[in-house]
Amino acid sequence: MPLLPEIQKASEAMNCYALLDYLINERFPGKVVVTGSLRARSVVVQEIVSEISKDVPIVFCHAGTLFEESKEYKQQIFDKFGFTDVREPQMGEMDVLSGDHDHVEWMQANYKGSQTCIQEALHLNKTMQEFDCWVSAVYHVPAKKGVRNRVDIEGKLIRINPILDWDTETVNEFMEVHDIPVHKLAKHEAPHHVGEGTAPSYAF
Image (cartoon, rainbow, N blue to C red; front, side, top):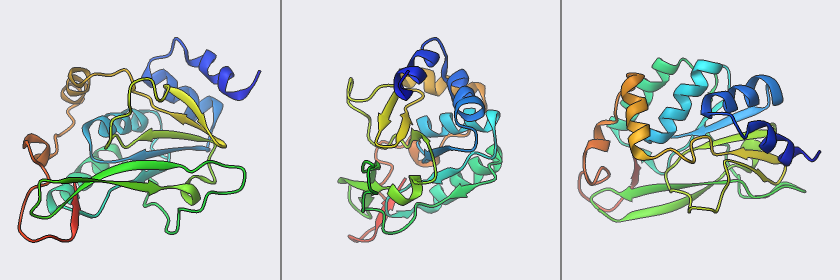
């Protein structure tokens, strides 16, 4: 049976925790990577991953320079999760590797003093080359309905969107039950809008 249908069939009845446990410990041991951010949905996925294995590589993705509040929050949640391998994306990532696909997380950021949100493509081709399974959990830009499945294939990688079917209420309830702190700036309607001037760009 081809790889994608095999994994899709195996994961049909699995909830998010069971799916990630299956991928990390059974199907792709040592070959799973998670891309994460400070968004609530991403933090939820990272909490679940931390309960399964604290050794899974976490690639922390952001656009521009982090706010001080974001630096504090990042330290807070990574202290809570206890991951042993937190990475930054490699440089010079735009070149697609032979026989592969362009692996991208779409990020959002604002210029300091502006309410205008910009989108930025974060290419992860070198970062992904040592892995077989990618848990894509940045969630800066919501995927369009029907565009991506929970389990999909992208070039040489199996790409996972583990909480594709979770609504905002489910995410908030999970964070409350698991005592996950909320980013200070997430409580504001325009979380990127602070300070004056036009540069540099800042990320939540």
